[in-house]
Image (cartoon, rainbow, N blue to C red; front, side, top):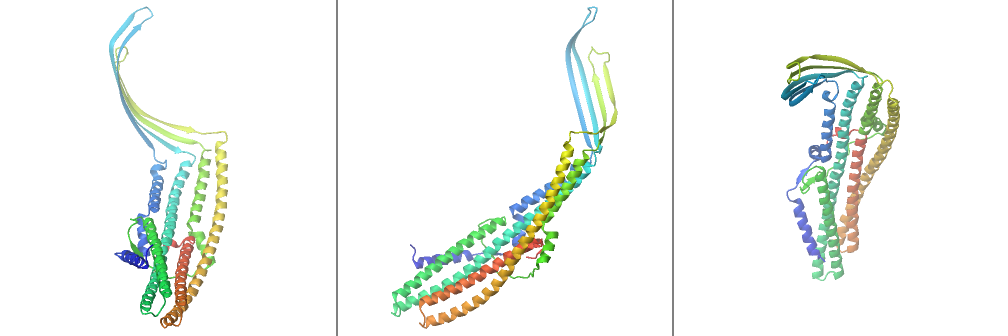
Length: 439
């Protein structure tokens, strides 16, 4: 079991290690690092590039297909032919050669507008992929800021506990002197040692939580998890939110609603694409070919050469496919109804979430104001208690209680501040304004 001296030494080492060569990460720098390195964001950006490739004209079906082919054959045969009158004709080692080449072009002139709607669908899919990236960036930033503020909260708590620990150390030093000169009892000295040990253990625990949170934040920023750093702990609240205004902004800017609207548009194209199967398809094909043969002795012609251009049109119309196309069209319309229902559901859900977040935000701001006053009151109380304790007018138990009250008040203020800040960020995300903020 460690003595209070060993615990104090450990705390000193922790303080020295943690404060050594720390870089400070601002919120703006955290956003920059996340956009450059966050794994989820990088994957989303690559998926967006795939969607851009799919929306290219090269994937649209509008361009013709050009196919070139060539080939060569060689034969060496022994043949025996018998005529009706019994005459036998034999040819030994009859050689023949063939060389051919062609280039052809195929193009669909009309496919019932299916190609047109499919191309528009691909372009909308690209827009949807951009919203997917935006959604992932928003969620990632919300997660990063939550962890950033957790590091800030633990940093503040660490400073608060460190200050309280210093007070306990000073008290222990005075108790030691008083005991040596016979001015106090052994019980008072032991109580002071216990309080130092408790504060030291609390400090060690908060440092462990702080180190874990820093590693978590490094992971979200896509960098080495062992990098030590500090964060900004100063917070401000510059947003005055109005509920109806937030609802109106969310309907226009919320990513979840925008994604659903894109899916509704994509479904409309699906319906048109399925309807295009009810119309005929007109195709054009042409080719230019070359064919040369050197025949063996069994052929009438020793050599044959052909070359020329071929072209044609073909019309195909699936007059009746057993009702498959009709079923697809009807199912697409049902999906459209479901998407409209989902949109109403999401809008209602987002309104609920905004109302909840705004209430948490307003309540937290009120709690912050109350806790600020509470800290001032407890600070005054502790100052007076400390003066009375030094004069021997109150017991160490009363002094310790005043110290704990101040510590709790400071910690409560710290917690309320970051609860309010996280609620503010959630409101900005739900209303679609998170990415437009200056951090």
